[in-house]
Length: 565
Image (tube, rainbow, N blue to C red; front, top):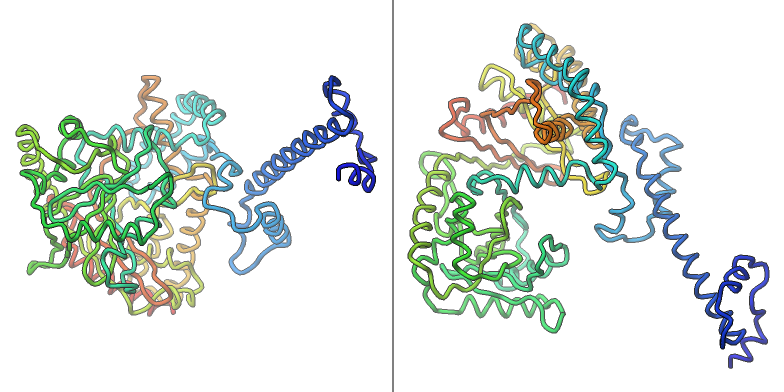
């Protein structure tokens, strides 16, 4: 067969000088001529394949470094952008996985100090009196000329060897070094299938969700865990996720969930309140958890019914049992929704399993932590409400961004409530860069303040308000684009601050800021629905009643739409 192949095809192929070069470097010992040709072909093919892959990856990185398309006028696409999109499609291939091109993404650029300082001064201008602003301008200019360039040099040096000059410091200083309670400070939650009920079988929903989550789960600690911990009726169960190296199927996970749901055993003393340790000091929590000799699950799932609702005083209350296990609490209630209460990676991995015994010392810590948890929870006021009068479908008819529209409505609502403007944080993604996380968009701008004042002035006409509205929206969108393309303010200042601490130098310009205020989050669902969350602390003298703000946000949304539709 090999002879016939050799006769039917010319071997080695002509016109391949590189192929002939490989032959020269092969060992000429006992190899036959045909074997040498085959080995040379394999080597050449492998080298060519690697070269093509590296070329495509580098070309894709160059293409993804282009961000001009983000600043193009809405609805208009230039010829260069069309060519860019076609080339990206060619080099990215079909159906890539989530992190397939992480190494092809460009690195997050380090903005110039003068640019960051200039944007910072612009962001605080509407919030400061003239004297305070002049003082801050002097501090900023001194920083940009003297200390700033020195700190910038070290930051540039780091950006050359680190895949992202922000991400590792952000995780270390914002999350891992925090010793305070994880409750309230670091947690967030999510609701899935809120308005759709795929099945009423609780165990089936649990099994399917666990299987789907593990497809995206990435291990970020040294020891790979092969199980999760399930919380049910005050008890913790260890559930294995793999069999002979294979991830269990949703049906197999459903069977394990059903066994847990049918288990009639009672919890051990102190077991039902174990999750209250997340409200303790992180050091105390870690020392206590070590007493349990646990096995580091990937996450913790709770199957109990857990209902949230408004009490008679109008404030959001929930069942205090279970408290919040870490790192993740999943809960399936009877109607069929899946909710997640997730603890950010801000402490050592929780070690959880089936607990055969609880030392008295740990039970005492748990009781103390439960008291702390109650104090923290009782200080938080949360209002979650739907807004279904209109959604992004009608907002787009105003020829503006739905996000910019809502941000301006929030600025107007806050001014009507408090009678002043405040520094506003809106999170933006930096996923256009390798290992990108978030950046801050400072939504309170001179343009948005001018719009708010026009809305409060009865002498202003609708045309004047509309003009200021469009200017403010365009400014907000521009700031969002700058943040997404690596030209934000806060992450750069944060890293400069970290460098200054390493060098043991201080600057009045890089001071820490602590603000009291509202937390307002929202999600735009479909074309006709927006869901809002408004949170504040009872202990803060700066915030009003969230139920009042809730009504105000609704009223302002309607007012803004009626004015500009």
